[in-house]
Length: 407
Ligand SMILES: Nc1ncnc2c1ncn2[C@@H]1O[C@H](COP(=O)(O)OP(=O)(O)O)[C@@H](O)[C@H]1O
Ligand SMILES: [Mg+2]
Image (cartoon, rainbow, N blue to C red):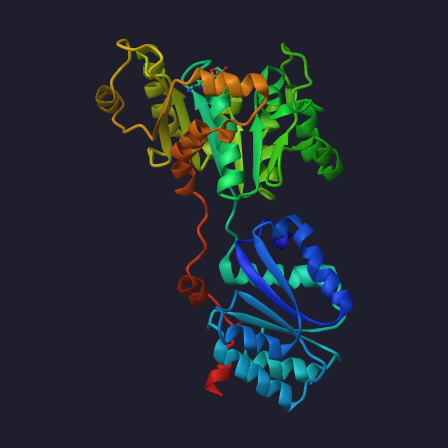
């Protein structure tokens, strides 16, 4: 696998029209390749005629792969017909029966981006698709969300879990939730798993590129939500490798579109590392004076880490209503912190402590869904959008079927 394609591929759809059994199996296996987490691979048992029928009515995807038994003028004519039904942003790759340099040359000269000989092994198939998508759409990466508290007990861990269920269940994004608290983490209670490693062991595994060990440290909470099941160290240990924590981020961000880090009980070094790199930071506070004061100072420090840019630093006011009459009003918060809270979440012990005690996810209740809905817009604004086809096409060459049309 080329290192330049060892990345999470951008969101895209690939349609394959195949008959060769081996190639069909290879195509189906693409879905278990982590790089393809955001790529929809549709395998149609068919040929160029089926493709023509489909795109006469439906929009064409980023890549079409067509298997053919013949490579004569008849087939070339049908490819021309197909191109008439496709968007000019669609790339075509042909899989044929023979290795023929002249055929390869004439097809690529016409705008077909590649010609492969069947059966196509999975390594070739995945590499050709990966290269083509990166060329077309660029290497859009995953998004890091940092959640940090103005002080302890303001609800960072609770909200990090709510958010992780939301991004996985509602936004349907493959999400990794990471608690940087070591043995102080309560994530295992909220999600319901046993820690199997220490943070130091996780760092060791990623530094050694030991994918098997790392895989054993991951707990699958649902189809799309994975948790790094750390926390076996003793509470008063100071992990010597903590400076290398970023290696964990580097590794997991290559395979998860969304990575959420709960910094509520992390030390300053780790907080700084993650906050510097985060695409979105949520500073959680209660609506009380002491907490808001720290929130203000913390937000300023994070803004400085981001070169003075505060666009992706949001204030989350949690437990609104916890001390009626003694809370700072929304208007005063806005004035004192020079920002509108990104979300205000009511104090609701029945919901939060209830879910915690019974090991339920908060979003399984209506009032919990409301909390998810309040937080999700802050993620949606940073989730990678698909590159508009026009912008993608500007940079492209050798992959445009519409050259057929000009012939
Ligand atoms: N909006 C809320 N209403 C009621 N209880 C809450 C709320 N948010 C969090 N909690 C509860 O407050 C306690 C502390 O929250 P936690 O997430 O552990 O804080 P932190 O991680 O910031 O230290 C937990 O028992 C949690 O369930
Ligand atoms: Mg916590």
